[in-house]
Every structure is written in C-alpha cells, then in structure tokens.
Length: 445
Image (cartoon, rainbow, N blue to C red; front, top):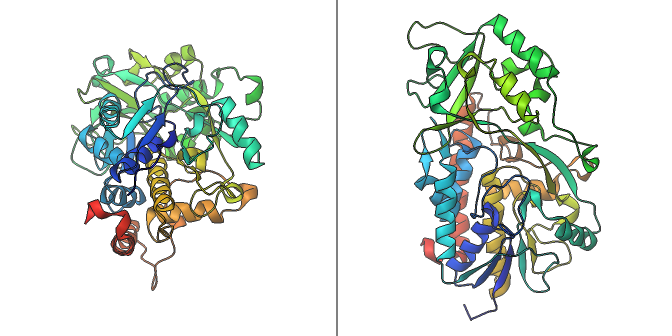
C-alpha cells in the first residue's frame, strides 16, 4: 500500500496489541498508546503489553468446543496473541493456559521490536481526530470514557469482574489433594476434595464472609453471569457450588477410586509449575477473609496466597446502538472500537475484535470493500451478535454455539459431535472468506 500517516491504536491489551500487529503486518505504520506505567488500572500490576488480569486460561483448544473454533480461526489469521499463547502454554488438559508473565513478555517484545509500531506510553484523554482503533478495554480511563459518552450519545454500560487467588505449590498440603483431570488420565490439575461435613462448614463461612467495601459509584453493582464471584454463587443456594466450580463429577482419587462430595481444582499458573490459581474462585471477599475461608479447604489449610482475589469495574458500550457491522462508531467512518469495550467478553473474543477491526481499518485505508465475516464462523457470529442483540438487555457475550446459525438437518444431540460439525462448517467458510478477500490476506496465501 502507499505510505500513510500512522494509525492510532489506543490500548495495549490483547485487542489493541492484535490490532497493531495485524495493521503492521500489512505495511501500515501504527502508534500504539498505552497509559501504563504512568497511570495504572485497579487490576494491572505491570507495564507489559497484553498483561492478563484474570484467569490464565483461554478455554478449550479442540474443535469440540466453541472456544476451540475461535482459536482455529485466530491461528488461521496469523494472530499475534495466539502465537504468543502457544509459545507460553502450561499444562491444562484440553484447555490452553499460559504462563502469564512469559505470555505478556512475548507480546511486548514482538510489538516493541516491530519497526512499523511505535509504542507511546501516555494516557489518551480525547478521541483522536484521525483514523483510530479504540481498544482501551474494560478499564478505560475516566477521561476517555467521558469523551466516548459525549460522542456516542449513549451511556456506557458496566458490569463487575473478579479475579481468583493464586497460591504457591509448595504450600499445598498434598496429603489432602490429588492430581488428575475430569474423565482423563493426565494430571494437569491439583484436586482438593472435601467431604460433606467439611463442605457445609466451608459454604456457611463463605456466605457469611465480609466482602470488600464498595465505592459510591459501585452501589448498583451488576455481575457478569459468566464470571460470578464464588461468594455470589454460594448465596444462590447451599448446593449451587456443587454444580459449578466445586462439582466433583468426573474426578476420583487415583489411589483408591474414592468419590468425593465436592472438589476444588487448582490450575498451573506459570511455566515453572510453582504457582496455581483456584479455578472458578473469582472473589470480592476482603483479603483477610479470603485466607480465613479458603484455608477451610483441607489441602489449602496452610496455603500461601501470592495473589489475592480482587474485583474491578468493566466498561462496554451498548453495541447494537453504538456500532455498525464493521465495529465503527455509527457515523464515524474511520473510528473503530475493539476488544471488551465493544461488547464481547473473554480474552480471545477481545483479541478477535482487535483482529477484525484492523482488517476493517485496512480495507477502509486502501479503498477495498469492507469484508463481511461469515456469520457461521466464530468471529462473524460475535460481530453479528453485537449488531443484532436486544439493546434493552444487552450483555457482553462469549463465543458459544447459541450465537451461531443452526446446522441444517437433524439435530446432533451429543455436544462434542455437534460442535465439531459447527467447526467443520466454520473452517470451510473461513477458507472461502480468505479467497474472496485475497487482498487482505496476501501473507496467508
């Protein structure tokens, strides 16, 4: 393409890093703005690009899961985030989990050494006048959020997300734990069982524990159903945890085959295998209460908590009102939103919107017809959801089979087989999409 002025990409998270990389891969110069470390967020702890602030898991990595379909598509499009995730993965059964420090370090290195990407460490408080992708994520700074509100004429929506604690491996009492995966023979997870009496004591203390104080702006606190704090789940009933993060299904002790009343799983969080996060235990409990209550789990009675759980506010727009079918703010030809602020939920869903916004931006810069991701692909289904969801009840969405068009013919009742059929259809559509938009994908030929 002809030389153009640098495109502004605001936000150095997963979505912004992906967008910058995709543009640079097509010869477009980019200025990537990241306000850290000069201004930190409530959830980040470093200045590295692509830092993960919640789980270190990206979900299932097989085509028998919706998350696996999305991963295939991202890999097919030479996603920076997926390549860095593959480089820094840690054992997690059929899921893809990463060493969060190695992962962010890899992203930072590849972005900062790319000659077409200039990383600018400063807060952007006003929307740029030229072409830009805003990928500031769920923790968008208040000044830029106010400018976006003025521009869109719609109030931002928000929900609250929580982070699970991390414990040191050598502080886990393995006399009360065993390794194993649900329904599998490998041993990527540490399982911490409880008998019925211990579980009921734990549940009682959990629902009665003190949560962190809310700020005035947090009084109307709404939680995202896909990432509820463990204490919120517990308060819905004494048995609810047994069908959620503490379900014992598919697990038994490898030594005697004993079944357990409940199981807490721990997943490896770094490549050395010295840190483990408590799966599904996102929480807003006070830090002292976290230690007191979670140490009621027998295997964690002496646990060293190297990171406590925290809660932070996530922001997003009402996409059906604000965005067009190309992730542009309606009426603004070269102003795109990407990542969680656009109304998707999840690491790779955010990455996918960064990738898509970069392709849309590139097409607009070189005068190509705007590409239309097929709605039977994961990326296309997510964009279609943002366009067609009911504004009155809009909530951020993960990739799931419910947002894909139904398969023709008889219903396939076994979910893995049904998902594999969706995957096969999506893979064929992706290849057709690449052929139809060959100018966008010369590096993939």
